Image (cartoon, rainbow, N blue to C red):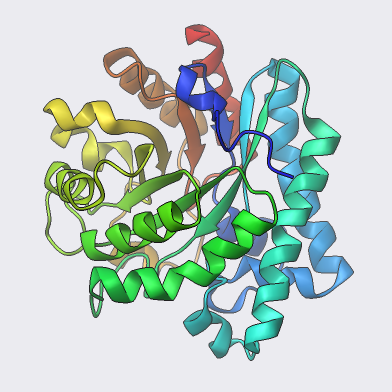
Length: 313
């Protein structure tokens, strides 16, 4: 059963953590194979499920120890029809995997949540295409139809919210926001940006947020930035639209997306340095209170982010 859907605690402004780069951690540190970066595929057996439990426990424990809120982001970034088909999933098998993923988040919340550390369950929606490349852009209507079944499952399984990660274009973000509204689910939209702070389509971040807000009557509860280093987007955070930003999930590396795609070793960057950059962003934009990581980050980075939260708490 949902707990926070009608009153998301992070909207009150207190600091919240979320996890790091789940796929890069599972591959490079935990030794799992993830075809197509599909973490949800680990749910098909107990070894993989336990690997996911261990991953989330490392992160949730940081929030619990420090008395901070935490967003349990389901490992379902790739759990949509086109990607699941590549992995050999039938439609029924995909639906079952999405349900199991949310049930795992409920299990973890029961294990770690305390009065000081509320834990929000978020159903993670990924892009139909690649998170670094917009590729063929759907219409908003196509995007809504594509993502609606996954969102409905999360609503039925008691998720508190939807988070659309690595959105590369406004049309898909609009479609997700509309599908979430139809299911009665609050939604956060997180955009991928390039080294110049624009979306992979070339759209300016502020323009993308304005376009989604205009098309959905300000449907998203907030926006986030992910899959880029702070150096890549810090300079574009100017204007009234920045007030709609509430979350950051940065890459550990300063490399471009093309460089990361070609890399054979993980670039984990410097957790303490990234923590300091988050501190600077929080000082300038105190409404940014959801802090986590993307490619290359892990529990060490999230531990550094917890210090930023504690300073502002």
